[in-house]
Image (cartoon, rainbow, N blue to C red):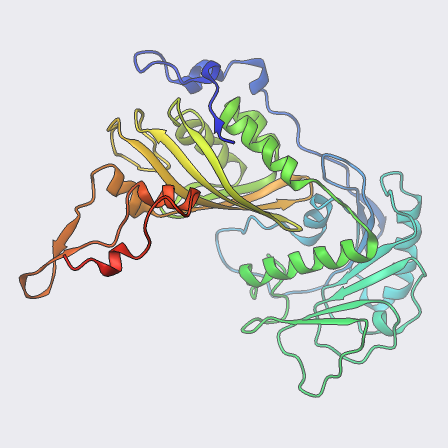
Amino acid sequence: MERRISETTKPAPQDARPARLLRSSLPNEQAPPLPSAPLQELSPEAVLQPPLSRRGTGPGLILLLPENIERTKRKDKPLDPEPIQKWAEEGFAVVGITAPATAIQAITDAVEALKKHDKVDTKDKIGIIIYDSPQHALTSRLPPEIACIATFTEPFPSQSHIPTYFHTSNTPEDYAKANNVTVSTYPNTQKHFILPGSATYNPPAASIAHSRNLVFLKKHIGGPVFDIEAIWEEHTYWEFERRSVAQTMATMVAEPYVNNVPTMTGGMGRAALTNFYRDHFIFCNPPDTALQPVSRTIGPDRVVDEFIFSCTHTLHIPWLVPNIPPTNVKLAIPMLGVINFRGDRLYHEHIWWDQGTVLRQLGLLPTHVPGPEGKMLRLPVAGAECARLLADETDGKSNEMIERVD
Protein backbone atom coordinates (compact mmCIF):
# COMPACT_ATOMS: atom_id res chain seq x y z
CA MET A 1 0.00 0.00 0.00
CA GLU A 2 1.44 3.34 -0.99
CA ARG A 3 1.64 6.27 1.36
CA ARG A 4 0.70 9.36 -0.64
CA ILE A 5 0.79 13.02 0.33
CA SER A 6 -2.68 14.33 1.16
CA GLU A 7 -4.18 16.82 -1.26
CA THR A 8 -4.91 19.09 1.71
CA THR A 9 -1.23 19.38 2.52
CA LYS A 10 0.14 20.28 -0.90
CA PRO A 11 2.81 22.98 -0.88
CA ALA A 12 1.65 26.47 -1.83
CA PRO A 13 1.81 27.45 -5.52
CA GLN A 14 5.11 28.80 -6.76
CA ASP A 15 3.78 32.37 -6.85
CA ALA A 16 2.61 32.21 -3.23
CA ARG A 17 4.68 32.59 -0.10
CA PRO A 18 6.87 29.57 0.71
CA ALA A 19 4.85 26.81 2.36
CA ARG A 20 6.98 26.87 5.51
CA LEU A 21 5.99 30.52 6.14
CA LEU A 22 2.32 29.74 5.75
CA ARG A 23 2.57 26.90 8.23
CA SER A 24 4.89 28.41 10.80
CA SER A 25 2.06 30.28 12.52
CA LEU A 26 -0.33 27.33 12.77
CA PRO A 27 -1.17 26.18 16.31
CA ASN A 28 0.07 22.64 15.70
CA GLU A 29 3.50 24.03 14.87
CA GLN A 30 4.11 24.86 18.52
CA ALA A 31 6.75 22.35 19.53
CA PRO A 32 5.53 19.91 22.20
CA PRO A 33 7.83 19.82 25.24
CA LEU A 34 10.49 17.13 25.39
CA PRO A 35 10.20 14.52 28.15
CA SER A 36 11.83 15.88 31.28
CA ALA A 37 12.36 14.66 34.84
CA PRO A 38 14.66 16.29 37.39
CA LEU A 39 17.91 14.57 38.33
CA GLN A 40 17.83 13.60 42.02
CA GLU A 41 20.94 13.46 44.20
CA LEU A 42 20.94 10.35 46.39
CA SER A 43 24.39 10.93 47.89
CA PRO A 44 27.64 12.70 46.96
CA GLU A 45 28.46 9.63 44.83
CA ALA A 46 25.07 8.77 43.34
CA VAL A 47 22.24 10.39 41.36
CA LEU A 48 18.88 9.08 40.16
CA GLN A 49 17.49 10.05 36.76
CA PRO A 50 13.84 9.04 36.14
CA PRO A 51 12.98 7.83 32.62
CA LEU A 52 13.28 10.42 29.84
CA SER A 53 10.78 8.67 27.59
CA ARG A 54 7.34 9.82 26.56
CA ARG A 55 5.92 6.95 28.62
CA GLY A 56 7.68 8.26 31.73
CA THR A 57 7.97 4.96 33.61
CA GLY A 58 10.30 1.99 33.30
CA PRO A 59 12.52 -0.57 35.02
CA GLY A 60 15.57 0.27 37.10
CA LEU A 61 19.18 0.31 35.95
CA ILE A 62 22.38 0.99 37.91
CA LEU A 63 25.49 2.39 36.20
CA LEU A 64 28.94 2.14 37.81
CA LEU A 65 30.77 5.03 36.18
CA PRO A 66 34.52 5.75 36.09
CA GLU A 67 35.81 8.51 38.34
CA ASN A 68 38.34 9.69 35.77
CA ILE A 69 38.72 9.24 32.03
CA GLU A 70 40.99 10.77 29.45
CA ARG A 71 38.73 13.42 27.94
CA THR A 72 38.41 13.90 24.20
CA LYS A 73 40.01 16.96 22.64
CA ARG A 74 37.76 16.99 19.59
CA LYS A 75 35.91 20.25 18.99
CA ASP A 76 32.66 18.74 17.72
CA LYS A 77 30.83 17.07 20.58
CA PRO A 78 29.17 13.75 19.63
CA LEU A 79 25.37 13.65 19.62
CA ASP A 80 25.61 10.42 21.61
CA PRO A 81 24.79 11.50 25.20
CA GLU A 82 26.55 10.39 28.37
CA PRO A 83 25.32 7.07 29.84
CA ILE A 84 22.85 8.38 32.44
CA GLN A 85 20.88 10.43 29.91
CA LYS A 86 21.19 7.79 27.21
CA TRP A 87 19.75 4.98 29.30
CA ALA A 88 17.05 7.28 30.69
CA GLU A 89 16.04 8.04 27.09
CA GLU A 90 15.87 4.28 26.55
CA GLY A 91 13.13 4.24 29.18
CA PHE A 92 15.03 3.18 32.31
CA ALA A 93 15.09 4.83 35.72
CA VAL A 94 18.86 5.20 36.13
CA VAL A 95 21.06 5.44 39.20
CA GLY A 96 24.58 6.59 38.31
CA ILE A 97 27.28 5.76 40.86
CA THR A 98 30.82 7.12 40.83
CA ALA A 99 32.23 5.35 43.89
CA PRO A 100 34.18 2.18 43.10
CA ALA A 101 35.66 1.94 46.61
CA THR A 102 32.19 1.49 48.14
CA ALA A 103 30.40 -0.01 45.17
CA ILE A 104 28.59 -2.83 46.98
CA GLN A 105 26.96 -0.58 49.58
CA ALA A 106 26.21 1.99 46.89
CA ILE A 107 24.53 -0.70 44.77
CA THR A 108 22.42 -1.79 47.74
CA ASP A 109 21.36 1.80 48.40
CA ALA A 110 20.58 2.28 44.69
CA VAL A 111 18.35 -0.79 44.64
CA GLU A 112 16.36 0.53 47.59
CA ALA A 113 16.01 3.97 45.98
CA LEU A 114 14.74 2.45 42.74
CA LYS A 115 12.26 0.18 44.51
CA LYS A 116 10.76 3.18 46.29
CA HIS A 117 10.56 5.43 43.20
CA ASP A 118 7.09 5.88 41.71
CA LYS A 119 8.42 5.92 38.12
CA VAL A 120 9.96 2.43 38.46
CA ASP A 121 7.43 -0.12 37.21
CA THR A 122 9.50 -3.28 37.81
CA LYS A 123 10.59 -3.62 41.44
CA ASP A 124 12.09 -7.12 41.51
CA LYS A 125 14.49 -7.02 38.53
CA ILE A 126 17.25 -4.43 38.16
CA GLY A 127 20.27 -4.41 35.86
CA ILE A 128 23.84 -3.16 36.32
CA ILE A 129 26.28 -1.80 33.73
CA ILE A 130 29.92 -1.44 34.82
CA TYR A 131 31.91 1.09 32.80
CA ASP A 132 35.17 0.60 34.68
CA SER A 133 36.66 -2.42 36.43
CA PRO A 134 35.39 -2.97 39.99
CA GLN A 135 35.62 -6.76 39.70
CA HIS A 136 34.32 -7.25 43.23
CA ALA A 137 30.89 -6.23 41.95
CA LEU A 138 30.83 -9.51 40.01
CA THR A 139 32.08 -11.70 42.84
CA SER A 140 30.48 -10.15 45.93
CA ARG A 141 27.03 -10.90 47.23
CA LEU A 142 24.65 -8.55 45.45
CA PRO A 143 21.04 -7.73 46.32
CA PRO A 144 18.62 -10.39 45.03
CA GLU A 145 16.95 -7.82 42.76
CA ILE A 146 20.05 -7.68 40.51
CA ALA A 147 18.96 -9.68 37.46
CA CYS A 148 21.94 -9.17 35.12
CA ILE A 149 25.31 -7.43 34.76
CA ALA A 150 26.94 -5.93 31.67
CA THR A 151 30.55 -4.83 32.00
CA PHE A 152 33.23 -3.20 29.87
CA THR A 153 36.16 -5.17 31.27
CA GLU A 154 38.28 -8.08 30.15
CA PRO A 155 36.54 -11.36 30.98
CA PHE A 156 37.59 -13.09 34.19
CA PRO A 157 36.18 -16.07 36.11
CA SER A 158 33.07 -15.09 38.03
CA GLN A 159 31.43 -17.09 40.79
CA SER A 160 28.22 -15.17 40.35
CA HIS A 161 25.03 -16.94 39.31
CA ILE A 162 23.90 -13.68 37.71
CA PRO A 163 23.91 -13.56 33.86
CA THR A 164 26.90 -11.45 32.82
CA TYR A 165 27.84 -9.81 29.51
CA PHE A 166 31.50 -8.84 28.97
CA HIS A 167 32.33 -6.23 26.32
CA THR A 168 36.07 -6.26 25.75
CA SER A 169 38.80 -5.15 23.40
CA ASN A 170 40.66 -8.40 23.92
CA THR A 171 39.45 -11.81 25.11
CA PRO A 172 42.18 -13.89 26.83
CA GLU A 173 42.92 -17.07 24.88
CA ASP A 174 42.67 -19.22 27.99
CA TYR A 175 39.34 -17.78 29.12
CA ALA A 176 36.73 -20.47 29.70
CA LYS A 177 33.26 -19.04 29.30
CA ALA A 178 30.63 -20.10 31.82
CA ASN A 179 27.08 -20.97 30.83
CA ASN A 180 25.65 -17.69 32.12
CA VAL A 181 28.33 -15.51 30.50
CA THR A 182 28.31 -13.76 27.12
CA VAL A 183 31.45 -12.19 25.64
CA SER A 184 31.69 -9.76 22.72
CA THR A 185 35.04 -8.52 21.45
CA TYR A 186 35.57 -5.16 19.75
CA PRO A 187 38.87 -5.18 17.82
CA ASN A 188 40.88 -1.97 17.52
CA THR A 189 39.17 -0.37 20.51
CA GLN A 190 40.54 0.81 23.83
CA LYS A 191 39.27 1.19 27.38
CA HIS A 192 36.25 3.52 27.66
CA PHE A 193 35.46 3.22 23.93
CA ILE A 194 31.77 3.27 24.89
CA LEU A 195 31.91 6.74 26.51
CA PRO A 196 31.30 9.71 24.15
CA GLY A 197 33.38 12.03 26.32
CA SER A 198 36.41 9.75 26.21
CA ALA A 199 39.47 10.28 24.02
CA THR A 200 39.11 6.62 23.00
CA TYR A 201 35.43 6.87 22.02
CA ASN A 202 34.67 4.65 19.01
CA PRO A 203 31.19 5.49 17.60
CA PRO A 204 30.54 2.30 15.55
CA ALA A 205 31.72 -0.03 18.33
CA ALA A 206 29.83 1.99 20.95
CA SER A 207 26.62 1.76 18.92
CA ILE A 208 26.89 -2.00 18.50
CA ALA A 209 27.74 -2.52 22.18
CA HIS A 210 24.81 -0.37 23.26
CA SER A 211 22.35 -2.35 21.12
CA ARG A 212 23.70 -5.62 22.51
CA ASN A 213 23.32 -4.34 26.06
CA LEU A 214 19.77 -3.24 25.32
CA VAL A 215 18.82 -6.74 24.11
CA PHE A 216 20.59 -8.30 27.12
CA LEU A 217 18.83 -6.06 29.64
CA LYS A 218 15.39 -6.53 28.11
CA LYS A 219 15.88 -10.30 28.08
CA HIS A 220 16.62 -10.50 31.80
CA ILE A 221 14.57 -7.57 33.12
CA GLY A 222 11.57 -7.88 30.80
CA GLY A 223 11.49 -4.32 29.51
CA PRO A 224 11.07 -1.60 28.63
CA VAL A 225 9.20 -2.67 25.51
CA PHE A 226 8.08 -0.17 22.88
CA ASP A 227 6.31 -0.65 19.55
CA ILE A 228 8.99 0.97 17.43
CA GLU A 229 7.15 0.17 14.20
CA ALA A 230 4.19 2.24 15.41
CA ILE A 231 6.56 5.05 16.41
CA TRP A 232 8.10 5.00 12.92
CA GLU A 233 4.62 5.17 11.36
CA GLU A 234 3.79 8.10 13.65
CA HIS A 235 6.96 9.90 12.57
CA THR A 236 6.32 9.45 8.83
CA TYR A 237 2.67 10.46 9.27
CA TRP A 238 3.70 13.88 10.59
CA GLU A 239 6.58 14.09 8.11
CA PHE A 240 4.83 13.18 4.85
CA GLU A 241 1.05 13.34 5.36
CA ARG A 242 0.50 16.21 7.80
CA ARG A 243 3.78 17.98 7.02
CA SER A 244 4.32 19.30 10.53
CA VAL A 245 7.90 20.11 11.48
CA ALA A 246 7.14 20.46 15.19
CA GLN A 247 5.21 17.20 15.48
CA THR A 248 7.82 15.35 13.43
CA MET A 249 10.55 16.57 15.77
CA ALA A 250 8.42 15.60 18.79
CA THR A 251 8.89 11.95 17.83
CA MET A 252 12.68 12.28 18.19
CA VAL A 253 15.12 12.32 21.11
CA ALA A 254 16.71 15.49 22.48
CA GLU A 255 19.57 15.49 19.95
CA PRO A 256 18.68 13.43 16.86
CA TYR A 257 20.11 13.40 13.37
CA VAL A 258 19.28 12.45 9.79
CA ASN A 259 21.92 11.49 7.23
CA ASN A 260 20.87 11.19 3.59
CA VAL A 261 24.06 9.40 2.64
CA PRO A 262 24.29 9.92 -1.18
CA THR A 263 23.85 13.70 -1.02
CA MET A 264 25.21 14.21 2.53
CA THR A 265 22.10 16.22 3.42
CA GLY A 266 20.19 16.17 6.69
CA GLY A 267 20.82 17.68 10.08
CA MET A 268 23.04 16.85 13.05
CA GLY A 269 21.32 17.84 16.28
CA ARG A 270 17.87 19.23 17.09
CA ALA A 271 18.39 22.78 15.85
CA ALA A 272 20.06 21.79 12.57
CA LEU A 273 17.56 19.00 11.89
CA THR A 274 14.58 21.28 12.58
CA ASN A 275 15.96 23.78 10.07
CA PHE A 276 16.57 21.01 7.53
CA TYR A 277 13.04 19.65 7.84
CA ARG A 278 11.54 23.14 7.57
CA ASP A 279 13.69 24.54 4.77
CA HIS A 280 14.84 21.56 2.70
CA PHE A 281 12.60 18.54 3.21
CA ILE A 282 9.02 18.54 4.50
CA PHE A 283 7.69 21.30 2.22
CA CYS A 284 9.99 20.45 -0.70
CA ASN A 285 8.52 17.08 -1.63
CA PRO A 286 6.26 17.28 -4.72
CA PRO A 287 2.50 16.87 -4.21
CA ASP A 288 2.40 13.40 -5.79
CA THR A 289 5.19 12.02 -3.59
CA ALA A 290 4.48 8.39 -2.60
CA LEU A 291 6.35 5.73 -0.65
CA GLN A 292 5.76 2.14 -1.80
CA PRO A 293 6.88 -0.36 0.86
CA VAL A 294 8.91 -3.34 -0.36
CA SER A 295 10.06 -4.94 2.89
CA ARG A 296 10.47 -4.11 6.56
CA THR A 297 12.75 -5.65 9.16
CA ILE A 298 12.13 -4.84 12.82
CA GLY A 299 14.90 -5.28 15.37
CA PRO A 300 15.20 -4.43 19.06
CA ASP A 301 16.13 -0.80 18.39
CA ARG A 302 15.99 -0.43 14.60
CA VAL A 303 13.58 -0.56 11.71
CA VAL A 304 15.08 -1.27 8.27
CA ASP A 305 12.72 -0.16 5.51
CA GLU A 306 13.11 -1.08 1.85
CA PHE A 307 10.84 1.10 -0.27
CA ILE A 308 10.39 2.92 -3.57
CA PHE A 309 10.24 6.71 -3.43
CA SER A 310 8.29 8.11 -6.36
CA CYS A 311 7.31 11.61 -7.40
CA THR A 312 7.21 13.98 -10.34
CA HIS A 313 10.11 16.42 -10.23
CA THR A 314 7.92 19.54 -10.27
CA LEU A 315 9.70 21.24 -7.38
CA HIS A 316 13.29 21.77 -6.40
CA ILE A 317 14.08 18.82 -4.09
CA PRO A 318 17.21 19.97 -2.25
CA TRP A 319 17.73 16.82 -0.18
CA LEU A 320 17.56 14.54 -3.24
CA VAL A 321 19.02 16.58 -6.12
CA PRO A 322 20.49 19.79 -4.65
CA ASN A 323 20.53 22.80 -6.98
CA ILE A 324 18.84 20.92 -9.84
CA PRO A 325 15.79 22.89 -11.09
CA PRO A 326 12.49 21.05 -11.71
CA THR A 327 12.47 18.86 -14.83
CA ASN A 328 8.87 17.54 -14.63
CA VAL A 329 10.27 14.02 -14.93
CA LYS A 330 8.62 11.14 -13.06
CA LEU A 331 11.01 9.40 -10.67
CA ALA A 332 10.94 5.93 -9.11
CA ILE A 333 13.88 5.41 -6.76
CA PRO A 334 14.67 2.30 -4.69
CA MET A 335 15.61 3.43 -1.19
CA LEU A 336 16.71 1.92 2.10
CA GLY A 337 16.22 3.48 5.52
CA VAL A 338 17.94 2.32 8.71
CA ILE A 339 16.05 3.95 11.56
CA ASN A 340 17.50 3.83 15.08
CA PHE A 341 15.24 4.30 18.11
CA ARG A 342 16.07 5.18 21.67
CA GLY A 343 13.17 4.21 23.88
CA ASP A 344 9.92 5.49 22.38
CA ARG A 345 11.54 8.11 20.12
CA LEU A 346 13.80 8.17 17.05
CA TYR A 347 17.51 8.83 17.41
CA HIS A 348 18.66 8.80 13.80
CA GLU A 349 17.84 7.94 10.21
CA HIS A 350 20.40 6.68 7.70
CA ILE A 351 18.79 6.88 4.24
CA TRP A 352 20.43 5.27 1.20
CA TRP A 353 19.72 5.22 -2.52
CA ASP A 354 21.61 4.99 -5.81
CA GLN A 355 22.18 8.56 -6.97
CA GLY A 356 23.17 7.19 -10.36
CA THR A 357 19.62 6.06 -11.13
CA VAL A 358 18.25 9.45 -10.03
CA LEU A 359 20.55 11.29 -12.44
CA ARG A 360 19.85 8.77 -15.20
CA GLN A 361 16.09 9.20 -14.83
CA LEU A 362 16.44 12.99 -14.87
CA GLY A 363 18.49 12.81 -18.07
CA LEU A 364 21.52 14.31 -16.35
CA LEU A 365 23.81 11.30 -16.69
CA PRO A 366 25.14 10.23 -20.10
CA THR A 367 24.65 6.67 -21.23
CA HIS A 368 28.24 6.48 -22.55
CA VAL A 369 31.58 8.01 -21.55
CA PRO A 370 34.99 7.94 -23.28
CA GLY A 371 37.08 4.90 -22.40
CA PRO A 372 40.50 3.45 -23.24
CA GLU A 373 41.66 3.32 -26.85
CA GLY A 374 39.01 5.77 -27.96
CA LYS A 375 36.15 3.43 -27.15
CA MET A 376 32.89 4.65 -25.71
CA LEU A 377 31.88 2.81 -22.55
CA ARG A 378 28.26 2.36 -21.51
CA LEU A 379 27.81 3.28 -17.85
CA PRO A 380 26.31 0.42 -15.79
CA VAL A 381 23.48 2.52 -14.37
CA ALA A 382 19.80 1.63 -14.58
CA GLY A 383 16.81 3.94 -14.75
CA ALA A 384 13.28 3.43 -13.41
CA GLU A 385 13.44 -0.20 -14.49
CA CYS A 386 15.48 -1.01 -11.37
CA ALA A 387 12.55 0.12 -9.21
CA ARG A 388 10.14 -2.06 -11.18
CA LEU A 389 12.38 -5.11 -10.75
CA LEU A 390 12.64 -4.44 -7.01
CA ALA A 391 8.85 -4.29 -6.64
CA ASP A 392 8.25 -7.36 -8.85
CA GLU A 393 11.03 -9.83 -9.61
CA THR A 394 9.30 -10.79 -12.87
CA ASP A 395 9.06 -7.21 -14.18
CA GLY A 396 12.42 -7.00 -15.92
CA LYS A 397 15.43 -9.04 -16.90
CA SER A 398 18.57 -9.65 -14.86
CA ASN A 399 22.13 -9.50 -16.23
CA GLU A 400 21.36 -7.39 -19.30
CA MET A 401 24.26 -5.08 -18.43
CA ILE A 402 26.63 -8.06 -18.22
CA GLU A 403 25.48 -9.51 -21.53
CA ARG A 404 25.52 -6.16 -23.35
CA VAL A 405 28.59 -5.61 -25.55
CA ASP A 406 28.02 -2.00 -26.63
